[in-house]
Picture (tube, one colour):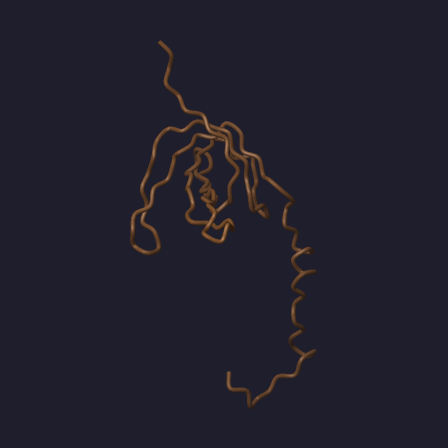
Length: 129
């Protein structure tokens, strides 16, 4: 008799990474999209995956997406922001790969330069804030 097993491969948004003594817990969201009556794609929901891995060598800082290959081993529920109950699919990851380019601080600063403060910009003592 064959063992029942469900494997999954997904690419999703990296929401949260927590480190534990046994490994990492990673929360990943995948958009559920459908066409609306104007024939445009829109996100109507998100599927949440609670991913665990014993591999603590991976670092995801600066990445927005990850690709995961692993085995589904159950489901979980969690409280959503609107006080309803959400559900998540639990996955034991065999492979986790960051996707896309790492967001570099220099690239962010190029898009949104910081304002000069201090001596470069005098303060208004009569300002309302």
